[in-house]
Image (cartoon, rainbow, N blue to C red; front, side, top):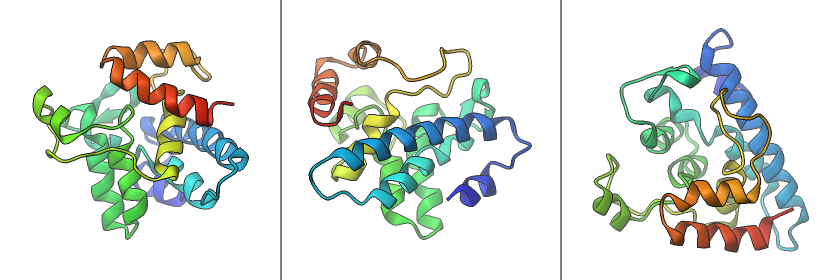
Length: 178
């Protein structure tokens, strides 16, 4: 999967190091969570999907992380899905699309006028939820503090999008929190 990241983010590009560090941190946390759950989890898939979940950032306008595309950042999940579908990884592609925040419903996309397809983009499988949860703890922005966010920092960030988003996080945190 690292070779696939390097296919789209060559080592000499500014986004490479930022994306790689973020993706490795998310993958490490997601794998730790998956290993300790009592139910059966596809650990290999969790690690791969966590490495690839942000592969679509290259199409977005996010100069702080080395991305010079034309799309708003919120589109990176849909763009990642397109890339991974084309690579023959449809299950990984769904993680890309569904990992934004704690997920987005078609109703939220419509109500907020988001530049996304009007369909549910909610993490459904256990593996999707684990990757999405782990991603909430790590920023790609090099100006932010390194290392994982605290649960309170995650709640505060999600709180800007409503209490329902925080409630989803809290359910996941009770289930997945280390």
